[in-house]
Image (cartoon, rainbow, N blue to C red; front, side, top):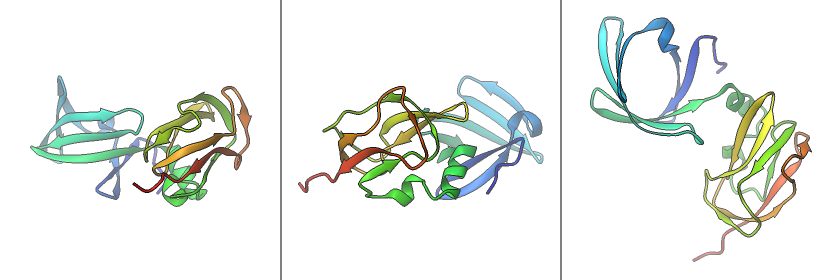
Length: 166
C-alpha cells in the first residue's frame, strides 16, 4: 500500500488503514488530550491514552473503546517492499543496513541484552532519522559500525547472539 498525499497510514490490530489528514477532511475541536471529530455527520470522541515516539505506537480511546495503533511511515513501506523489515529478519544473527545512510547514534553496547523493539541505532537516510530496533530478544554480540560512519545498503551493522535458555 503506497501512502497517498494527504493521508496517514496506521496499523490497528494487524490491519492497515489510510486515514485522511485531519486538517483537510474533518471538523475538529481540541481539548487537552481529547479531540472531537465529525465525519460524514457522525461524531467521534478520541482521547490519546499513550504515545511512544520511538516505536510510533499509540493507544487511542475512540468513544470509550481503546485501540492500539502504529503510525506507518513511507520509509517503513519502502523497507518492507525491499524485504528488509524486522518481521522478516526474526531471529537473524545480524541486522543489515536497509539503505545507504549515516550512523547518527548507537544506543546499545556489545554484551547488552535487548528485547524486541528496543532502539539499537539511528540511521540517517534521505534526510530522515530512522530508528532501527531489535527484531527479537537477543544479546548484542558485536557492533560493526561507529557513530558518524557512512554505510551502504546491506552492510551488517550489528551481530546478535541468542539469549541463553533460562
